[in-house]
Length: 293
Image (tube, rainbow, N blue to C red; front, side, top):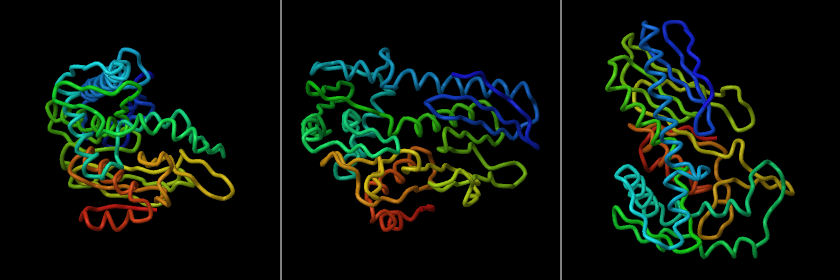
């Protein structure tokens, strides 16, 4: 984690750091710099704790321990169990399109803006290692088939936002905005009656194309703004169909959804993307505020 930065912006304190491969920001409607610094440290420490615990890139994480289990049963703690329960729920709600076992496809797909498309034989070799229905999950014990892996990255950042919001609520009555790489939530209404203003960018530019006013709740964004392939004029999104191993057809470039919690907002934005060209119809049926392009 990079050093914490704390600066005064108008009537708020703004704290920043980097975690989970994302720029992280804390906007605090408080006057006391010492309180602001303490809150920033606590949020940063929690973000790092969760990153260390669930990152598939760390050998000492619970995710890596599960992925090295080679068919053996792994007993998990309550926090991990809650995320696995949620992953199971998303798998069922999405008819198998949201699948935390599909991360093995990264071995053949690299979404770096280039044009390298894997051949079908490479994809077919990995498909037998994908499918939550092949997992034996009896809380608190998890068993993967040999060769299978899980990746909780699709829900981890949103969960971290909600955890930090809960942490901050226990420390102060002030309105605080927790923003981890564009997935964000606020602790409560602002004292001055104003909304938090969130800039929303398009996939082609970092400049805001819209300003979202957030009074309470959370906002999450999913899309392929920076992770895609382009070949012969066709754009391939990094949102993969775990049943076929190929990118979802014609998804929007970006979807933002507002919901009471960040993990709910992230669930809806991701599920919408998985509907591809039918994403907006899916969102209309959910009766939630959303922004799409």
